[in-house]
Image (tube, rainbow, N blue to C red; front, side):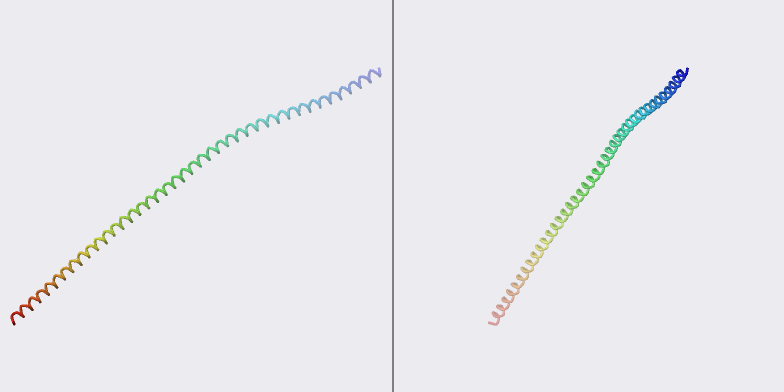
Length: 150
């Protein structure tokens, strides 16, 4: 009877210890597996979401930069072309005006010079004719007077 009681007590104690160890081991294994699976799933989902978000952000950023760059280049090009065109037109107009003014001044100067020369020539001719007339008249008068006294 004592052996049976001892065996029963030993069996009960062994069973209790084994049950406790098994439960603890199972709990640890279950917790570890759950934690590992949860971590893996969260990491995968987070990585995927971040990659997707980053790709979307990259696309939006690239598109916005392209639009801004194109707009800035268009504006700068238009401004430069307008400035160059305005400058060229101003230079051409100034050159044409200068040429026309110079030409008109040259023409006026030439005309004035010709008029002056013509006037001077006419005056010289008139003066010469008058002097010749005076000399001829004087000579004739002298000759006539001499002839009368002779």
